[in-house]
Structure formats: structure tokens, C-alpha cells
Length: 207
Image 1: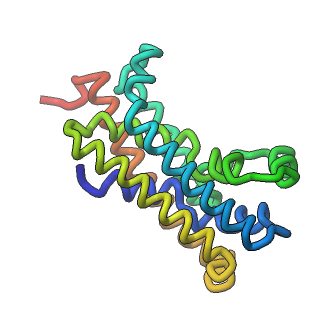
Image 2 (image 1 turned 90 degrees about the vertical axis):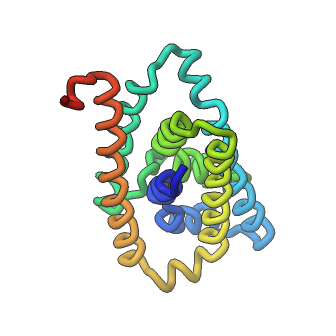
């Protein structure tokens, strides 16, 4: 297991791009409420990644879905996310305006929609399951779960420093970072789809 899964997850989750959402959702929160929101968001992001890493393949098997098909579908989803990011939109931001308004009125928005789907939505889950198939040993699975810890830490750091980050980078800086991550993600999405297509149609490999 190399660092490619971590790079892919960082590109998809991209907590920097979610900083403006965090600031919006936590307007009027006390420092204690904001810290609690940060902690719950980070913990939930880790939980989503860990569950997908440890049980994602079993879930696919339960529904009778082949990994090759999942790779092609997941790769398409990653590519759609990358295209959104190239337009400076968060990869997982799929909430409607009504959902945003409803979430803003709740006592806690740390899990929905801040973490799911804004941080760890379908694209993140698909990526973890695909890389879980490539993990053949206990330590490789442990590394994948460990990457969830890194994602959680990055999320906690970005949300804790949300206001300074917003002031320093500004909207333009965050947009540039999002587009760069989108370019990386697009290349990785093509790799994932190509791998799945070769498994579905071996003739594509040539030779």
C-alpha cells in the first residue's frame, strides 16, 4: 500500500474547500459548540473511511456487485467530482438549498450535512472500497484505516483554523486549491476506470 490512497482521499475530501461551509453552519456558535462540531466532524469522517475499508467489500458481495463494475462506476463518480472541483466546487457538495437551510436550524450539523455528504460522500466511500480490494495484508488494511486518521486530523485542523484560513487564502485562494486537487483527482479517476474496464474486458489489455 503506497500513498496513492491518501493523496486521492485528500483530494476528494479537501477540507479546505469545506471551510466556507463550516463557517456558514457555525455562525452564532459559542467556542465550545464550535469545538464540539469540529470533534464530531473529524470523528465521523474517520468512521466512514474505517467502515468502508473494513466492510466495504463484504457489502458489495452482499449485493452481488463485482469490484470491476464498482471500479468503473466509482471512477465515473470520481471524474464527476473532479469536474466539479475544476469549477471550484467541493467534490462532495450535493446538498440542496432547502437542506442547507434545514441543517442550519438544527442543534448539531456536524454529521449531516457537514461531514456527510460535504466531506465524505459517495466518491469518498467508493475510493476507500476500491483501495480496500488492493490491500492484501493486515498491515495494508491497517494503513488504509490509518489514512482515515490522517483525514480526520486534516479536517480537525482546517475547521479549527477556519477563520484564519479564510482570511489568508480568501475565496480565490481556496478556489485555486480546489482546482489543483480536481486536476489530480481527474487523473486518478481515469486510472481507476481503466483498471475496472480491463478487468471487465481483458481484451482491452492487449497482448
